[in-house]
Image 1 (cartoon, rainbow, N blue to C red):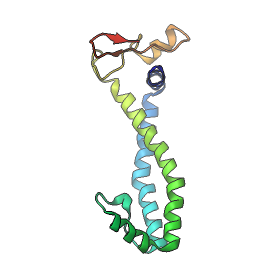
Image 2: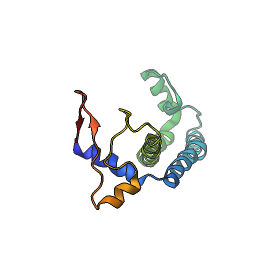
Image 3: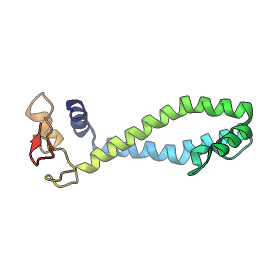
Amino acid sequence: MKTPLKLSSWFYRVVTTPLGIAAVIIFAFFIIVILPQMARQLAAISGVDISPDTSFIYTARDLYAMAEAYGPEGRDYYIYSRFTFDLIWLAAYLFFQAATITYLVRFLPEKSPWRLRLEHSTPAESREGSSQPASPTFPSASGGTCA
C-alpha cells in the first residue's frame, strides 16, 4: 500500500500550474487534432468510415462486418495503429488524468476524505522541511488514519 501513497505524494509535489496547463493542452491537441487525423487515415486506407473505437454499442457480427469492410490493408493498418498510436494516447491520457486530478485535489478542503493528508500543507513546505518526501496519511475504515 505504500507504493500508491508514495506515487500520490510525488504527484502532489511535482504537479504545478504550468504542468497542469501543459497536460490540458496536450490532451486537447490529441482530442482536436490527432484522434480525428487517425480516423481519417483509417478511412482513407480502408475506404470505410466506421470503427469500433467510435461506436458505443456493437455486436460480434458488427465487428466482423467492420473487419471485412476494412479489407486486408485496412485491418493491417488498424492493428498497427493499436500497437503504436494507442500506447502514445494512453501516456497522454494518463498524464492528463494524473496532473488534472492532482491539481484539482488542492482545492478540496484540508479535512476532505477525498484528499490525502500530507505532513505539510503545500508542496513548497514539503520540500523545505526535509530532504524526505512528505509522508501521506489517508482515512481508514475505522475512522482513524493510516500512515
